[in-house]
Every structure is written in C-alpha cells, then in structure tokens.
Image (cartoon, rainbow, N blue to C red):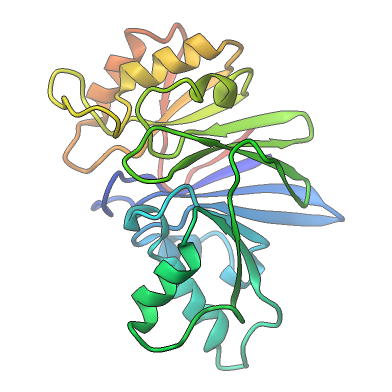
Length: 255
C-alpha cells in the first residue's frame, strides 16, 4: 500500500499545500487501484501531479466541510466536459448523508442539475466495511461538529488509519488499533485552542494512538498554515515514544 499526500493543510489551502486529500494505491488485477480519501480546497490541481483524475477508482469523503470535499466540484467538470467526451460510467463516491444534494447545490445552484451521470453516491454507515478493489475500508464515526468519519484502510495485511477531523473520542481506539500508520488530525495547539469536539492537538493524537495499542507510525496532518508544525510535533513527541512524522505535501510513503 502506498500513501501520497496530495494536500495536508488544515481548514483551508495554505501557501505550501492544498487542503486535505490523500491518494492510496495498491496493486489489483495487474494494475494500481487508486483510492482517494477526501478532495479538499485546492487539492484537484495537486492531484494531477500524481495521477490523471480519470484514473481514480473511488473517492471517500470524511465529512462535508469544504476543506475536505469542495474540489469534487472540479472533479465533476473533468469527468463531464472533457474535449474528447464525458467519461463513461460514474465514479463511486462514498460520503456522509446528503453529499449528493449538497454538492449539486454548490455547483448548479437552484437548477435541476445533479451529478448522477458523473458520480454515484453511497452513504457511509458506521463500522460497515466497504470492499473497494484490494482495499477493505471501515468508517468510524468521530467527534466533529458535523457528521464525520475516520477511515481504517486495509490491504495485503497492512493498515492505514486516517482520523479525518476529530477531537478525542472512543472511536479512535478501534480505528487506530494495530495500524501500521496513523494519519492523525493535529490542527489544535495545546494551551491555545480550548474548543472541544472539533480537532485533536498533537498530544491528544499521540495519546489516542498510544491508547489504541500496536501502532507502528504516527504522522500528523491537517495543520493549518497559521500553526508552527514543529510545535505540533513537539507536543506529540512529549507523549509518543517513537518518531513523530509530519505529513509532507507530494510525498509518497510505503505502508
């Protein structure tokens, strides 16, 4: 399994990275199966450095905040209005409740448009695994102001756990347990951000991974441009016994 960081800026696109988007690939039937986790603001442009968007096999959306899903509108354009003609068959999009209506409204306004010829939407169900090519993906409902999920992605005996946007919650234990790599939201800074039920800090991400047990690697992501990533890393390192990694835009990691 290979993880490419398409975008890792928190809450909005930053000067060095788009907002959240992660490309996960594994071999399937003699080719790469291309699974995209989120497609936030600015991420469609960066995705094209790594993949022709026409080669995506499925998209999973953690939640419907723009920094995780708004570039699906641009992806719709790439599928419908190609000079050589629209792509055949809709792309599977697995997302929270109401995604199809919300995105169609954002693009088409009040017109009766819709995106059903370009995307086929399925509503995520907590703890109901999805079989997608070589991957089994299990969504876990996490702690955020809107309906939001983390994804446990498994292939060939390896596990990637992506928290999505969340504060500490019991769901992080089964989501993270035994994962080879935990990709964790660390948007908040201890001592500065007091709101609860929104985001993890570096220390809370590390504690959740530690409590889950058996985690191989901890990587922080979703760090807004106004944060110093090294502060987030240091706060996690005060809890996590090993190396704390920072997600780097355009980097690819083998899991």
